[in-house]
Length: 138
Image 1 (cartoon, helix red, strand yellow):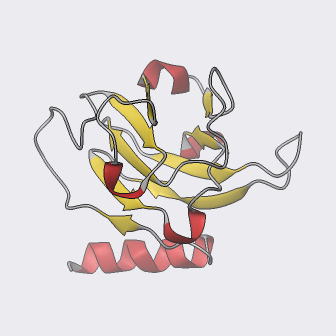
Image 2 (cartoon, one colour; image 1 turned 30 degrees about the horizontal axis):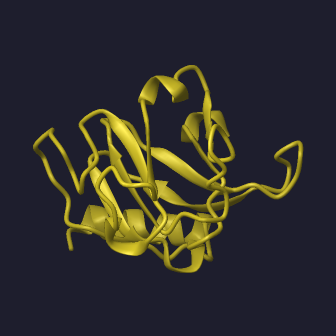
Image 3 (cartoon, rainbow, N blue to C red; image 1 turned 45 degrees about the vertical axis):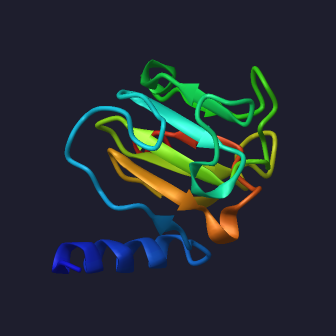
């Protein structure tokens, strides 16, 4: 691991003490990534990106996150507390949140999704993900 990756991991560990994710290898090319089309955020109900446009996955365009927007996994299909792996195939980073209260005052950070990266398992965050949001909006 590079020094930058080690420092980033240390900072995330301090910010999110319960954070434990299994990242898939990083990619530079823009194109499909674990079945997720370029410029989309995808969520999967099973570990290891276990579906390819099947009934247990969903795709979200990044314009849903523009201007501090939020992907609420409760709409249009309720996927709250059901997701086990995610792909961020955009050029932005996003926070994964476990929503605990109506006014977001008790939201718990499950991790930070790096651009163009897949996470084959959320480990301790499996079946807890409720929302995806830009880190600048929290």
